[in-house]
Image 1 (cartoon, rainbow, N blue to C red):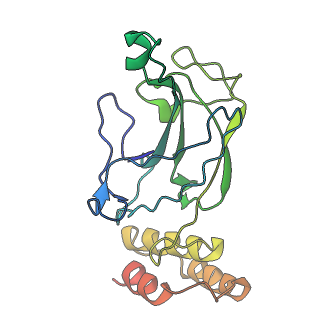
Image 2: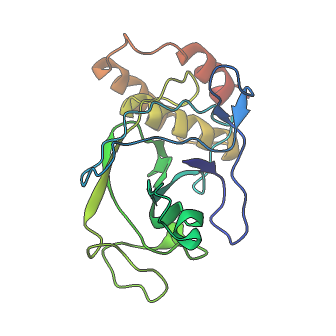
Image 3: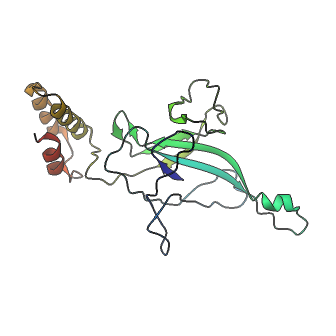
Length: 206
């Protein structure tokens, strides 16, 4: 598992995954183990990532799946012993959807290849430069949880923040639109909201 900010060929993962106790504070990759001979593996590892302050549409989590050979017999050929890991496929999860940070349980397809520009690939359409496993069937399930006072999860707060950003770049905006978004706060669940004062100050100040 890696966190990346680009899908271009040769791009490197970001070193922002919290390491295990005793290791470096941050690592560029994290690994999960499964039981031997498990045809439907379940990954129980929990991975924590320090997100950048500014997230764009190319930030994504890349998952790489390997088959690990446990052959240790002395009769095994040296070639088989060297090939301990064999690549199975890839899956990826963009952080943003419609400009909003994703924090939910997702079911993702698995690709047998990883061409440059894979984030632009649509699993529902036939693409000549990518090969999907089992016809892009959602084989991989992953659950994410966002803990942030910068990126709001509430839809009303998200739209309000976007409108404030628009007002900063477009002087002379319609005040009625701002009032409309403020009225939407009446339908919010305020208990999980912790960063509103910071968001309001940073996003709406001139």
